[in-house]
Image 1: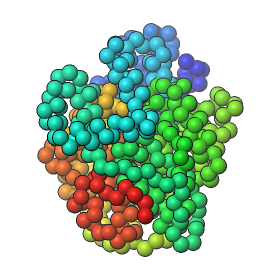
Image 2 (image 1 turned 90 degrees about the vertical axis):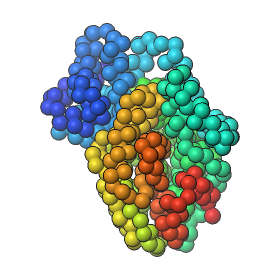
Image 3 (image 1 turned 90 degrees about the horizontal axis):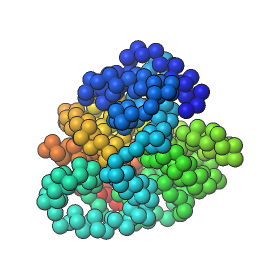
Length: 432
């Protein structure tokens, strides 16, 4: 590892301010499953100690939620430390055959929208048959990871492709590109449709490049750095001619804002990557900068707003989504307790570490349920499926929506019932 890595390790003064916000420390109270404990292990390896399976296990158990980055008074860049360490683990740590097979299957599927689209049909058919109750116990015995995949899969409706351009309504105020993502595009097309509608209603021409693919977030945060760069290069080329890129998935937006660091040592891409990072905006961040124009119609409902980790900690965006929601007449926000502790989704974490993820999901579901809100609002697809599954598992299901869907319902005057009375997957997935 580099000298810069060693310098970053030295920034930690082991004060412990990170401990109350670290999900695995909250669960287990183990020092080596806290940020400062992991930094101690990183330092040992950097100084020459071989990477043992036990060390790799502590690094694998980290969610990469970045809550410790927000809580650290010394400005420790744990995000850069854990990304570099994950890459080292992938390079030198020999995984079991089952672990390798699972990881290769996940990364051969989820970052590829066309492959996800190919499994939509069979998955919809499977869901329609109601076989889940029979299959889930079998999967749980065979593989906790496969059981988690089955349990977390959201109900699927029909997915219609978005056009390459959605024209602004009224006088044009901006031209933006829109990332459609992978899981968001294929499993939550209604969120992308709502995003495009809201942007258009607020006076934006929305450009949706046909050839766009994965942004590289899943690979980047799993130590697959070369793979992440490959996806990132394609994203840079797809959006290079767009002045502003609007992203409605917290994890994707965070990764795209990291492109400058991802390509810091590749001179031929560094400038282009940094430029794209600087032009990337979260959906709520962009609308807050743009300012409202379209009329907000009342939505008489209470919402529990969930801070997605890569929005709150990765991008420092907390006030903007709340301000947008508070701008809707009749809507009341109810805060969720311990908002800085992750729900357990964390990209692929709920697939690779299903037991810990389920514990965190159950904990978050209790806190969300305690708000007694009508609707849970979350700005990341992973959080949506994770918390929805935990709420259902706890016997207290709740409707879930993205901020874009809430704004869409208000701007179009659809009323609160459009958000809470229909299954999430049946929400309008077309732009009109």
